[in-house]
Structures are given as structure tokens and as C-alpha cells.
Amino acid sequence: AQSVTQLDSQVPVFEEAPVELRCNYSSSVSVYLFWYVQYPNQGLQLLLKYLSGSTLVKGINGFEAEFNKSQTSFHLRKPSVHISDTAEYFCAVISREYGNKLVFGAGTILRVKS
Amino acid sequence: DTGVSQDPRHKITKRGQNVTFRCDPISEHNRLYWYRQTLGQGPEFLTYFQNEAQLEKSRLLSDRFSAERPKGSFSTLEIQRTEQGDSAMYLCASSSGDAHYNEQFFGPGTRLTVL
Image (cartoon, rainbow over the protein chains, first blue to last red):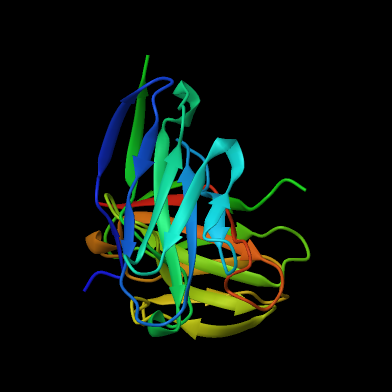
């Protein structure tokens, strides 16, 4: 089974609209969860991470994500997107089941249109 | 600090040639990771170093691949007898501390094309 599944390969959205990028993981043990963003010709940059505590995590650039253990999900949301949010977004998990290394999903390309 | 740098940014080579990539991590970061990213996929872990010690290698890393971090600073990744299947983006990341969940800072990558 895929460790991390990003359900949408591309998400088009108009500027100032809300967006949700979906991420599900498969692990029966405790996990650490991450969202990274990759702008064209740049390295991956950490948006936010969940290690423990509050299930609602706030990150940079107005993004937030919610850890849902029962649904094994960690969806990324932003209430109002900007053109500059156009990028590829990667969900990643660290779990003992996968050798305690970062395991990435296939990515979701967010295209913000004016 | 200028972040993680990688050199070259692009490399085109013919099948069977050897190539070497360099990664300069953020100074004083003790951990250094190599990943490979193919089109339409997320990065896949290849190997990592804690200081100069290579602590783990993925089974993706065939015996044609070798990585070094001789003085615990920069690292090199060499691919011998390249194959077309080696075409990918090779990413380097660094972090501080002893936990994999510490933030990893990524370089811009080296894009390898094997003809």
C-alpha cells in the first residue's frame, strides 16, 4: 500500500478562493507529518509539521493543516490563495513502519488563476 | 547563511559515463540527506550522513552509486556507468540535531539526464 497518498495531482483554483489539498497516509503506529512546498527552480521548503499536541497546525504563508488520526489524513488548507501560491505541494510522513525516514507523496500542483 | 547549494544544477551525460554531484549543506548542520525525484513523484530517500558517517542506504542505491562526506561538511554523490533509468533530479538536504523529524533544508537539486 502507498505510504502517502495525495489524492489530487493538480488543483486549479481562482485567486482569493479557498483551497484544500488532500493527503492520506497508511500507518498503524504514531507518525510525524509534514507539508513541503516547491516553487519552480527552488528547493523544497517546509510549510508546517505535526509532531504532537494540537491537531490543528499553522504554518507559513497562511497555510494550516489538520491531523485526523481516525481518518489517517493531514489535509492542507488556505482560506484565500494568491497567485504566488502556485507551486507543487508535497505531503510527507515519518513512521517507524517506514524506517523513520521522510516518505513523500507524489505531490499536488496548485495552479492559482486570476 | 546561503542555504543548501548543489552543483551542477544540470548534467547531461551519455549512458555508461560516470557523474559526480556535490552538495554543500548549511554550515554546522550535522545531518545530510540525498534524495532522488523522478517526474511526477515525490522525493525518495537514498542515503544520509551524520557528520562524516554514512548511517543508512536505501535499497534504491545500487552498487553503482556511492556517496561520501569526508570531513563532515560537503558531500558528493557519484554514479558510475550511468543508465537511462538514472535520469532524475537528485536532491540534497541538511538538518541539525539527531532526529529525522527536525526540519530538513533542501537544495535546488541537480537534474541528471542520461542519453
